[in-house]
Each structure stands twice: as C-alpha cells, then as structure tokens.
Amino acid sequence: MAVDIFGSLFYKTLAILFLIISSTFSTIWDLYMDWGFFEPDSKHLFLRKELKFSFLPSYYFAMVSDPILRFSWIINYLSITSFMGIAVSTPLLRFILATLEILRRYQWCFYRLENEHVNNCGQFRATVEVPLPFALNSN
Image (cartoon, rainbow, N blue to C red; front, side, top):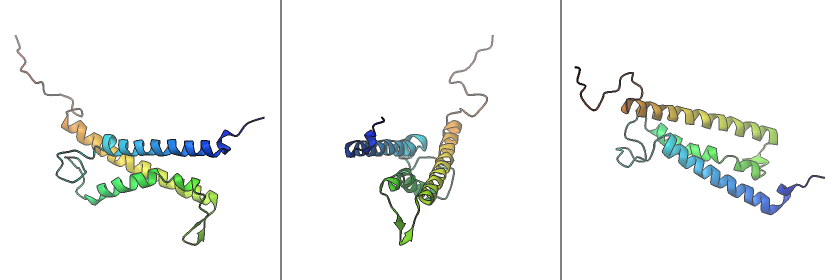
C-alpha cells in the first residue's frame, strides 16, 4: 500500500517553498551569471558594459519577463479554472504554460548566446591566435 506523503499540507507547503527558492535562485543566476547583467560600471542601468543590440527595451523586457515566466508554474498550484471570465481547462492551461516555458528558454538562449559572444571576443577566446603578454626571442 503506497502512502501519499504529498497529500499532506505540510509537504505541499514544503515543496512549494523549495520551488520558490529554486526559481528565485535560477532567476538570479539567469540575469547575473548567464546574461551578464547588473555590471557595476555599465552606462545602461542594470545591463552590461557591452551590448550587441541597439534596441535597449528588449533587454529590460527580458529582465522582467524571465522571472514572470520562471514563476508561471505557480498557476498550476492555484487551481485557476477561469481567466478574465473565460473558463480554462487543465489541459489547455498546461499547454499554455508549456508554450510559455519554451518561449522563456528561447529568450534565455538568445541573451546567453549574446553574452557568450561578447565575452569570447573581448577575452580572445574566439580567435585562433591569442596575443602573448611578452615578446618571443627567436635564436
């Protein structure tokens, strides 16, 4: 006979608490480590020093949408059956949330790739020959 330990309010609360901690940590990691935002000497507020795209609102949109989409799993736990007066079935809701997660991951890849490109070119990791910090003597 199996025991449903997650049927208990204590374990549900504990699971949600750990999910919130995990999502918070992952969001901070996305913004700071993966995307390189929040550099202290950046000329644009909360961004990094070198940006490849001139349309700055896209960066700020990503900074706002990533946490919102990262925490969209909460909707499953709230048992929302209607949205703005429109009845939402559970399969439809899960489909929408899964689609939003795919979009969040696409967004993550986009800014992660840009940050990696900026760092690779700036630190000579994308070149064949790296300049040496000393002169070579050929005898």
